[in-house]
Length: 339
Image 1 (cartoon, rainbow, N blue to C red):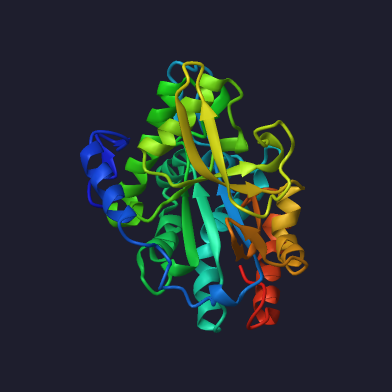
Image 2: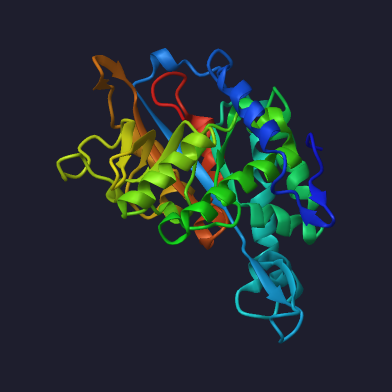
């Protein structure tokens, strides 16, 4: 259980504890998340790769033709209850995909491997799982989030609660989505766990083009305590308009409003490609093997290949990802390129 109720009057707890949320984030920022606690020899690597799994199911009206009175439930629940429709027979596989990191990570650690993964679960998915009584997913994720022996392998990414897309969502509503996810996450896993969430994953990797909306977007992330943002390579550019030249290094995303106000945040670049297949078959690992250290601010740092993909969609993620991770962990070198 978290530090305050997950549900209030049968509704998810999405607001009302802002001072406690802010205090938890401030306390978390005062201490490192992984530095000094990781078994990976960061000083000895030339390159690295990072993969993130984005998990989402929307809430939908179901249970009647009248949308004004139809029950709101998670799409996965509807799929499970109607396996004869379309591709709904995949629902049990989706269910396991949401749970399986809680199985794979402990197994790999017990074998002496050093797995690393980033996880991004939307609030509507977490709520839908609860409504469908699929509590085994949260039960599997809790040790990865809270157990000191397991959580070093997992980094949670913040996201909008309802998969709101930043370019087309009013800025004040987008801020509420970001805050709502923080409340929901803290209610499930605790305030201390929320204080360790430093990165943000925008829905659909979408960034606003309008300068005022872009400024408000970054300002929201700043105010909510996020320290870095995952961005798509072809949606950002250098100040002179040229495309990025070194996507395997962190950048500063700087947005200036029409009034001249500026907000900035560290940007980790997700390189272009077919996300699901690249992550599912661990192509980022193969790419990282061909890279060397790069100069950044007068220092040589490891090159980083970063990819994010839906964690449940498509045959590759549903069927090929688990054996790929096991094979990689069994053959990864002791030094060199690590995740």
